[in-house]
Amino acid sequence: MALNIIRKATTFRNCSLVKNALSHRRYSLYEPDYLEATKSKIPLYPMLNVQIKGYVYPVLENYQSFIHKVAEIMDIDVDNGWPLPAQVLKIHKFKPQTTVVTAEYNLNIYERNIQLADVSSIQCPILIRTLEAALPEGVSLNIEIFDPALEEKRYIPDKELLDMKSMLETYTTKK
Image (cartoon, rainbow, N blue to C red):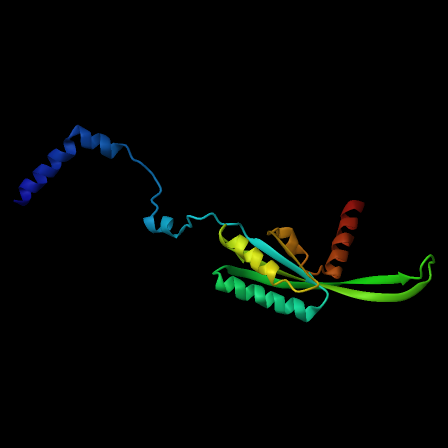
């Protein structure tokens, strides 16, 4: 019986159709069905950056925690969040029709950034309306597509390293 199976297999292998099918190799990438199932049928926004600025630090901090809570409730991934150093503005109040300073004020503008990932096109307008409705007084809200250059502002440059690089450039240009 085993001999009959071997004979049938060898005659099957010698068939011209089978030779053509086996000789032409087809290379393709196999992708399982479950990979397609994880993709969203609703279009997604790229990484969004929520930027909030305000004059009062505790208010800004509470509003940032509110944004985190709303994003968690809506199943939006909060990828990252960071504060930036405060910008100090010096404001002078002048007497009318003169250059005499009557008062001088120092204003601190605090800034926080929150990165949101995988926001669907259905969730985004709802999120924006919710954040605008709950916006505290004196806080400004700006939502944009994330720009990697914005993250560069986050890091404070090393003064010594920059000085050494400039010295190295001067030495290489002299030679």
